[in-house]
Length: 295
Image (cartoon, rainbow, N blue to C red):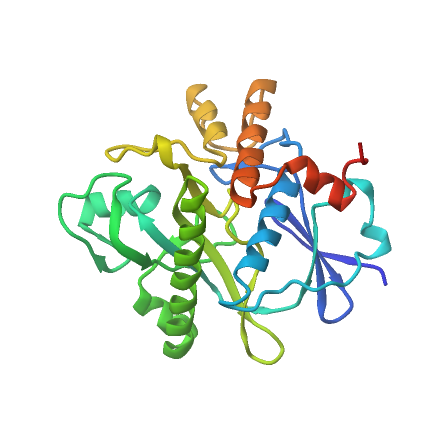
C-alpha cells in the first residue's frame, strides 16, 4: 500500500495510508518564533520519534495511544525515514491543546505576573518565575493554524468540546503529567510543563496522539540547574532562540542560517534529553531502527 501526503507541519509530514491509518514522519526542521529555520538539526526528528515511542509504552495504562504495529509503506521505507516514522490510527482530534503545568514558566509566568492567575486558576501571591505550583494545573489552549496557540480557561474548553469531554481531558492530562514528572525526577529532570494532543478513536475512546513528552512539546529542566527567580536552561530549542535574540533577528521570515556551533549544541541537547529520559544510548536507537549500520 502506498501513502499520500495530506499535511505538512512545522516538523511532521503526515501521510494517509488507506482509510484508517497515518504515517507520521518527523523531519529535522526546527522552528523558532513560528518561523521554520532554513538549517535542520540532524537527527532531531528521530529524537522526537524515539522519545514519543518510549512514553507511549510507559503511559499506555493511563490512556490508549495511536501507535499501531503496521509496516511502513514501501514508498516511505527509505534510510532517511528510518527511526523517524510512526504508523498510527486515525483519530478525530479535539480542537483543544491539553497543557499541564507544574511550574511557573513561559506564557504562564507572563500571565501570572500581570494578573496573579493562569488560565483562570487563581494562584498564591508572591510566586517567582520557575517556582513550583501548589499542584499541577490544566491550562488548555486553542490550536492555531498559524502563529501561537491561545491559552484559554477550562470553562472555555468545555464550551468548545463539551463539559464531559473537557473533564475527561483534564483528568487524563493531569494523570499523564504526574506519572511522567515522577519518572523524569528519577532521571534528574524536572518536567515543568507539557502539551498533549487527545482525540477519539473509531469507537469513541479518548486516545493520545501526535507526540508525547518530547523536547518540542515539553519544558524539561536539568534538576541540578533549577533555580527559581528567573528562566532555567532547558532541553529544547531555547538554544536556537537565544542565538537568534543575540543577533537581534526581527522574527519575520525568512529565518537566518544557523551556524555549525548552534546546530551542534542544539543536537547535543536533544540527544541528551533522549538518553537521560529513556536511560539508553541514542546510537542504540539508531541501530535498532535501521538508521545506523550495526558496528
